[in-house]
Amino acid sequence: MSFDIPCPVNYGGVIDVFFKLQALVERGFKVHFHCFEYGREHSKRLESLCVSVDYYKRDMSFWKFFSGKPYIVTSRMSEALIRDLLKDDYPVLLEGLHTCGVLLDERMRGRKIFVRAHNMEHEYYRYLAKTEKNLRKKLFLRIESSKLKRFESVLAKAIGILAISNKDYEYFKKSFNNVYLIPAYAGFDKVDVLEGLGDYVLYHGKLDISENYNAAEFLIKEVFKDSGIKFKIAGMNPPRHLLACAEKEPNVEIVENPDDETLQELIRNAQINILVTAQSTGLKLKLLNALFNGRYCVVNDKMVEGLDVNDLCYVANDAVEIKTIVSDLMTKPFVEEQVAIRKSRMEAFYNSSHSTDRLVELLG
Image (cartoon, rainbow, N blue to C red; front, top):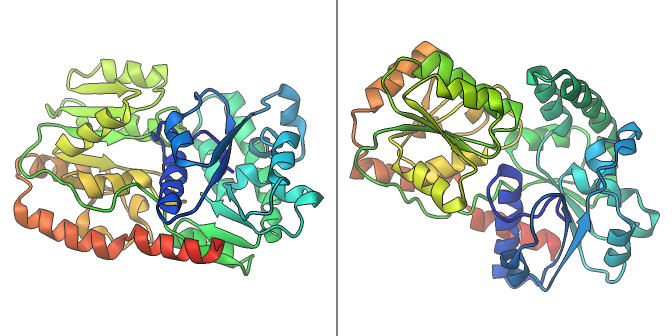
C-alpha cells in the first residue's frame, strides 16, 4: 500500500517503494499493489510488474486539516481501500506512516501487516517547519509534527516495523519490540562510475522541500558565487525564489524536473556530486545514487551520520571547507584505482540482495 504512485521513480520515497516492489517480484512474489493518486498519472510500468494495481483518490479536502490525526494520514484513509484489502488474506506492507490509517480499522485486526517506516516523520516535519519560509506552511508543519508524534503509537498494531536506517532502527526500538532493519532500496546493485574529469558540480534533490531548496541556496550564495566553477542544480519543482537566486549567478544552472535518464546522466558526468543537509533522519537515497554512479562525493556530516561511508566521501561542514575541497577536486581525474575501491566498499556497505532475503523471510 503506497502513499503515492511510485512512477516515475524520481524522488526519495517512491524510489524505495518501486525498487523494493521490483525486488519482491524478481523473487517470485505476486503483488497486488494499492496506491493513492494526487497528480501523478497511472503507470503502465507499475502495472506490468503487478498482478493488479488499484488507485485511490487522495482526499485533500480542507476539513481534513482539522482532524486530530495527521493530515498525511487522514487524506489517505479510504473505505474503498479497506474493502479491497478485505477481499483476500495476503500479508500487507504499508508504505510510511502516511498509510497507517489502515491499522485503525477493526476489520483489519489479525492481518499480517508490516509498516515500512520511511522516516522519523515527526522529527522530519519539525525540521521542515523550522526552515519553511511561508508562514502558513510553517504553522501547518508544526501542527503536523505534533500530530505525527502522537499518532506514531499506532505502529504497535503492526506485526513488524521495517526501519530504513540504523538511526531510525535505534529510535523505533526504544518504543516497539517488532522492529527490523531493511536498508533503503536505491535501484542500484553495481557501481557504474566514469573515469576521467567532469567540468561541473551537481546538487540534486526534490526542490520544493525546504530541506533541499535551503541547501541549494546555501551552496549558490556561500560556495559557488563568484567561484568560476560551473554548478548545476537538478530536481523537481524548484520554487521561484530559488530560480531567482540562480539567475543572478552566471555559473549556476537549474535543471527543472529532469526525467530519470537525464538525472542519471547529470550524476554520472559531474566531477563532483555535492550533498548537504541540515537534518539526518532517514537514509538519503541520493547519497547512494551518487556513490553508485558518480565520481567524487562531497557531503556534510549530517548527510552521512551513522553510516560507515566517510572514506568514500569528502566531509566538510562549512562554506570555507567546501570551497577548498571542491577547488582541489575539480582538477583531479577519477582514476581506475578509485573505481575499484568504490566497487569494493559499496559491496560491503550496501547489499540489497541481503535486504531482500530478510524481507522475503518476514513476508513469507
